[in-house]
Image (cartoon, one colour):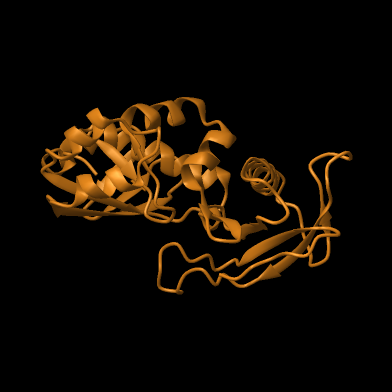
Length: 235
């Protein structure tokens, strides 16, 4: 979301990207991304406020409230390297007048300062924290956004873990999958260390969102059930 609409010529002398009508093409690897330009959205600041975390400030929200145009970037993710490319491209757009970024496939919103930091560091844990969110329901926690890496999301159960334990388990398990891309099967077990509890893996289809929802994960979801304690799920 930005002031980019009147600055399309900013790509004219860019060394990394070409803008061809409604498509941006990388000069390095021929990856292409659809770009959609829209006019001001009066509800945009409220959407950023609702989706924002510590990664976006009230000053960012105030600037977004003054925006005059909106840009949507649509591209294929699928693994960490492709997410890196999307981060780089988005950072380029921000430098042409961007005010903030909202990731429609996970619901997170961040400010320019955080996105530039993400682009400079490319830290896997920070990328995961930006592209994936943890959702709390009555009896369980689950991640949303792992389809950005072509991987299943994760669900854990409150009668087995505290919130802090669930966050740690989800972060570790997600990063293990993003970085190592292991082959996992039903009834495999997983533990963070040899001294921490074992969890039994059960795979199922994504059932938290409809298939036409941007949050829907076509790769499904892993249930991590602590061995010896049955899951409790009413939702």
